[in-house]
Length: 286
Ligand code: C2E
Ligand code: MG
Ligand code: MG
Ligand code: MG
Image (cartoon, rainbow, N blue to C red; front, side):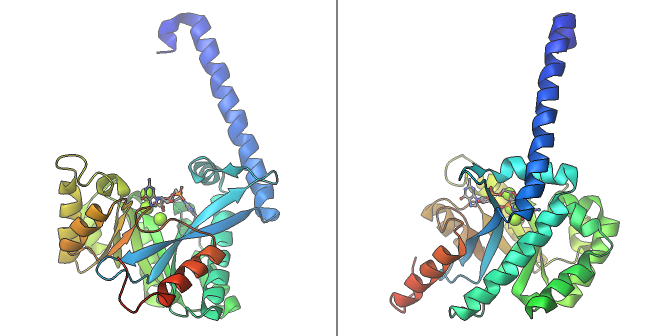
């Protein structure tokens, strides 16, 4: 398209490209110092039992607040962290923060909490990844059952030969393994059968339109049946309405995560949220 506009058009196109590259470079540098200065923190989003609203787990989501208070969206810093390799340090930091959150939850009367962390392809590819996770755990005196590791479908399927072995080791060590954003990647059913996983997370693209768009539920339905056949736990992402939660629950979906159930929150707020629920009546909330 740029070529069709002639030489001038092409030159303008290049300049824009360069601006974007410079911006990415600056953001990558800024991210490195943000990590060092502890401007990266996590929010935790509950994963709720759809049948009785129990909250057995929470997903840790990276957040970046600049010195001036402005937020940088994960949609901009995660891809840059992936492209520059900073995702390895970021992922380690998030895991430490998740460990600290588990300790604080236990100290606040919630000793059974499990936290899911996102693991990038670059982390998983590293020789020392498994050992490092286990070392961090022993530093905090925690155990693998308290964590779930979310890997994206594309990653797990793409570098299957490599990832499969590592995932198997992590699973043997006691971590729960989840496939994130399921349905958006290379859905090779044969690979799914051979991958050492416990949980499928249906991507929110297929969940948030349930009840809104005709036939939007077809993929969610297929993923649910598939997961059930393989004996996997299913988490539906992006549950935004009661109707969606009910639809999913009626089809045997165990867990839901979404703005319609609970938003991601900083740890202190999450503890208040958990206390308010247990302080309420004995009957589960809907
Ligand atoms: P994800 O792992 O699929 O996380 C779920 C994302 O969906 C989160 O976005 C969450 O805030 C959002 N979400 C949850 N419920 C709803 C809903 O009902 N509606 C809508 N529209 N969105 C909902 P967030 O926090 O912006 O993170 C985006 C992505 O960035 C994550 O997607 C994950 O792939 C990546 N990410 C975040 N933190 C980390 C991290 O520590 N490490 C790595 N490697 N990736 C991370
Ligand atoms: Mg995730
Ligand atoms: Mg996801
Ligand atoms: Mg997603």
